[in-house]
Image (cartoon, rainbow, N blue to C red; front, side, top):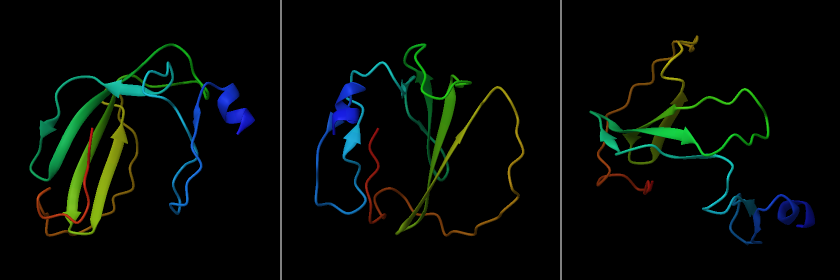
Length: 111
């Protein structure tokens, strides 16, 4: 808890399985923020994320970053983060999905 709060993060112990106890506050200088409107795609959404400030934990940060969200099944969501300005190798793995809409999914996505 001390290390978390020393970084300027919020500590919130919880009984929810796999939920993080340490996280950045909304106004944190770290991380990314929405860079515009959410674009609807054939299978979900696409949104641009922009780095908040020059601060970095890991270095070699990319900005902007694209986030694609795909509703694959009622119980499966796929998300993909990528650099829109530089191509990279991606494993050519095809996953068939019936493609559901946000209204049909058993989960909720919020931006």
